Amino acid sequence: MQRRLILALAASALLHGAARARGDAPALLLAGHYRPGLPLADYWVSEKYDGVRGHWDGVRLRTRGGELIAAPPWFTAGWPATPLDGELWAGRGGFEQAQSAAGRLRPDDAAWRRLRFMVFDLPAHPGTFDERLAALRQVVAGIGQPWVQAVPQRKVASDAELQAWLREVVRGGGEGLMLHRGASRYRAGRGDDLLKLKLHDDAEARVIGHQPGQGRHAGRLGALLVETPEGRRFALGTGFTDAQRADPPPVGSWVTYRFRGLHAGSGLPRFASFVRVRADEARFRAPR
Image 1 (cartoon, rainbow, N blue to C red):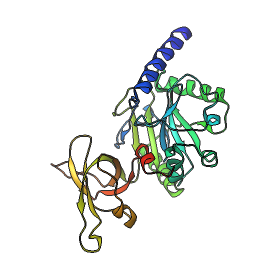
Image 2 (image 1 turned 90 degrees about the vertical axis):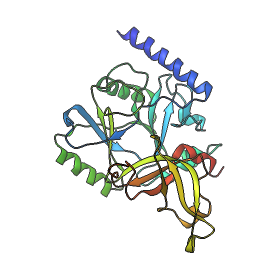
Image 3 (image 1 turned 180 degrees about the horizontal axis):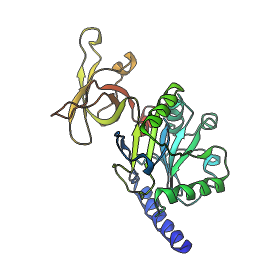
């Protein structure tokens, strides 16, 4: 059994390495949205870390989009050939610091010493998440570096307990919670195997155009024209600073937006507001 597991991990590592050589985005498990009524006993729950998604392919660290992250050699020294899925995190409220460090073409040691790599999955492991979680803890313990940590996971008994934990996390400056189905295997794409729970919904869309501003925004951005992964298009006109309106995210970039539910019929987001350029696009706009 152990020999089969080692062979499976090695085969998957080769596939991940091939994807890296081609510059492809890694095939990652993505989060859907939590819905009340799901069988909570089936899920492990953890804090949702607001950082930069990092995929260690056994050789190099890359973003969700496939961009190479220029980590200092000491940061990944001794990491295993086993692929790791995690989040580069600078603590609650530290998204900008994590994004800036990960986006530089040359690593800034001082910035990286403030980061932790919070490991939440083993993409190459063939078992269920229950099994991967036990293996993950062993892998992280074997790395033995204080900046590499296994994400704490726990079970909750009820939706009331889940919502109370969510409020506690948000009050403390956290972003939300993640739910991971224990019986699930690692499969790329979205579904109910991995779910996120936040006080506000968020999603991502690609910038396809700029609308000029009027009034006090004349000569600057009025709204971004964006397209969701499902092909729905809408204007995103709020949430920008004056600096962002003067130098808006370019066409082709991906942005995160916040919203409150969807319109019946059209499926477009209600009260959509810009949050930021997606983390793995930030290197093109981060200081060098």
